[in-house]
Length: 268
Image 1: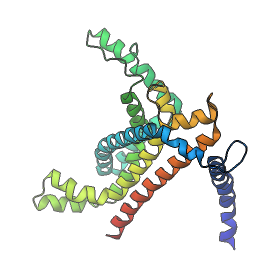
Image 2: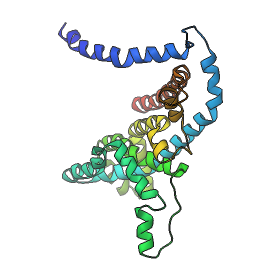
Image 3: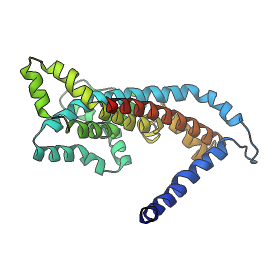
């Protein structure tokens, strides 16, 4: 009885902030403005299919970059002395203490043609960088910068459980660094890798602040289109709900796929 009573606040929270909003999204997705059932909202999604594919592509690129950068960082932190691991994690998480919008806005002052980077290059009479704002590269850079810790942390948490004796034994048996990483570190880190990929890909595909600020309206993602249906001049909550529902289904499918891979690794 006590355990059931303790779960009541969570159930209330889940109903108010998860089930009810989800029910409203489903309701608006399948109704007209007069409340009649319709499938026309879902049929309009084909119009935004290129934007959806573009969002998936940029999110995939950002996820791969985060994995390439985050994996060696996580390994380095996990192999450091215990007292140094805490300091390194604090340094990595310190930018996360700053507001998300401020962190993204800071990149505008860096990437702008008259930004800090080009001013420093001019001071040393070096070649200036072109204005990156409004490009896909700037959007991907913003994703990588904001979501990189979400890749590092789950991989690090798994790597800390890898016994150093396994690595030492592999080296004693003649394995070089490449084989140690490919045959021991990566297979044992797969659960953390799958979790990190999910935690980076999901917010990347649905982001709209990064694409608006760094893309400056020239590289809209599906998150921008959804937001415009609720807050923009083209107010259409029915279409916005349909787009959000489709995006939700795609995200859930991706998460289920990676969870399946993770469960298979645990079974092995």
